[in-house]
Image (cartoon, helix red, strand yellow):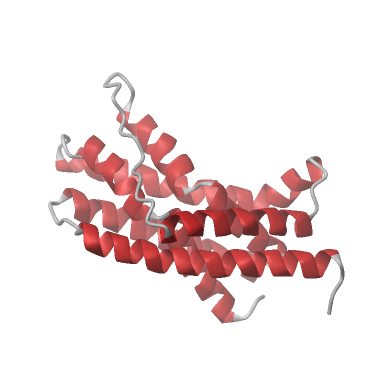
Length: 205
């Protein structure tokens, strides 16, 4: 089991990297024309799909890497660089929003899974983070605490979506500020991943 602060960092890191605010325009476009019960179902599907995806990679991610012959230090470095690049986009004020779904024939529940849950929320950055953390310890308690962190983020996403569709609007300035703060968090985590990967690869003290 890691230090408790590491799980707190995982929790806030997942919130920062998944950027639920970026997924809000897509969700509102889909759920805004639904009945409250239907929109709640879509939000629930998004949250559950997010949890299932990350927990799956937390459990089987190491086996996937082994299948492709990728070492954990190499994955740490590559994942860390990916996080840093994502953070730089956020810090530069790249507020491009995901495209909404124009095809009305597509099932709304399908859209809740792709692209909302995957890859907008559970994208390469979040998957990298849970795979790296899952490799740090093999104890059942470690996996349980990771699952609790992922579940907490999923609950936050669900509540955020429900609040958004109820008519409460988050201002553009507040969104921009939150993205800047999250960008700093992501950059710090990414750099730490890179340094840890280099340290493990070269067996530095």
